[in-house]
Image 1 (cartoon, rainbow, N blue to C red):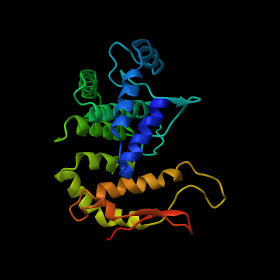
Image 2: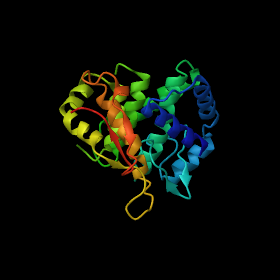
Image 3: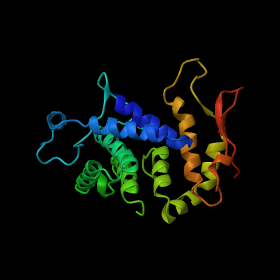
Length: 249
C-alpha cells in the first residue's frame, strides 16, 4: 500500500504543478525498486488470474496491484477500474513511468521498462485494441512510452486520456485538443463538486474533481494559445464549495 500512496501523491503533484524534490524522487525510486514482487508472488497472482505463468504476457512481471479487502483501488486520476487487466497493468506501468523519469540511467529500471514494453507488444491493449477497458489499458502503454521514448470515442476516462496527451504533446495531440478546446474550456469554467453532496455525505469520486480540473488545464495548456498554465488559476469557491478554473474561451 505504501507504493500506491507514493504513486498517487507524486501524480497529484505532477498535475498540480507542485515541485517534486530530489529527496522525494530518491525516496520513491528506492521504495519502488525495493518493493518489487518476487517471482513466487507473480506466479501465484497469474495462476489466480487463470493464466499460464510461463507464457503469460497480459499481467505484470514486477509489480502487483494492492487491494483493500479484496477490492480494487482507484487509478491515479480517480477512475475506478472494472477489470484486473486494467488495474494490474496501470499500477505497474505508472510505477515504471516514474522510475524512468526519476532514474533513467539505472540499469534495473531500463531492463524492466524494456521487457515490459516487449510484453505489451504481445498484448491486444498494446496494439490499439478498442474493446472495453483495453482502450484505457492502452493509455498506460502510451504514458510509459512517452517517458521511455519522448519523441514518440470509446469509454476512455477523459482525464486519463488527457494525462497521456500532456505527456506526449505532439502535433497529433495538440490538433485533437484544439478541436475540443471550447468544450474543455467550458468544463474548466464550470463548477464541480469537491466532496460533500446535498445530503451531507462524502462522494469519493467527487473528491477527485479538483485533480481532474488540473489534468484538463494541463492538457489544454500544451496549446500555444495558453502558454502559461499558472495564469489560469484553479480555486474552490467558499460559497458553493465547488472548484473552478479562470480560463478564457
